[in-house]
Length: 88
Figure 1 (cartoon, rainbow, N blue to C red):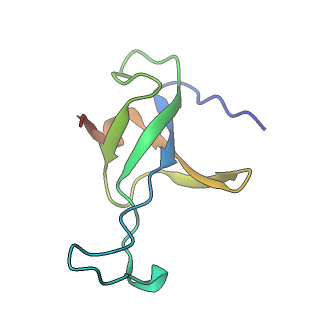
Figure 2: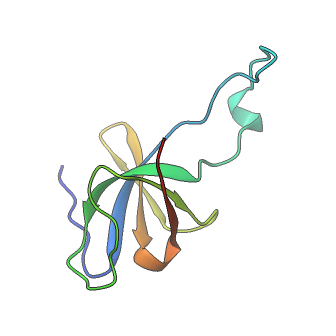
Figure 3: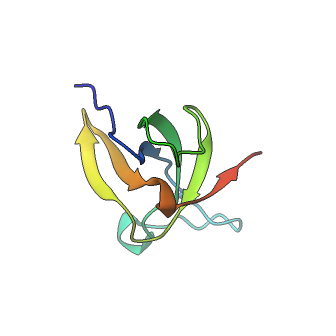
């Protein structure tokens, strides 16, 4: 299945957070927060979209619509919900 966002929307693949603390304690799935970072997979053709495919972004905590493509969690976000581009 292929998804192409429309207008000022962005399709983001969620990036899983670290499963272990720095001291070595494993964090169970039930204690984890919803990820707030992801990799841009596709962008719409709107004028307000400032990110590109492949960039890692930080987005608002309760933003977007969750979808599954295959077995992978994705979000469709408004361009306004993207807060920053993350570089390593």
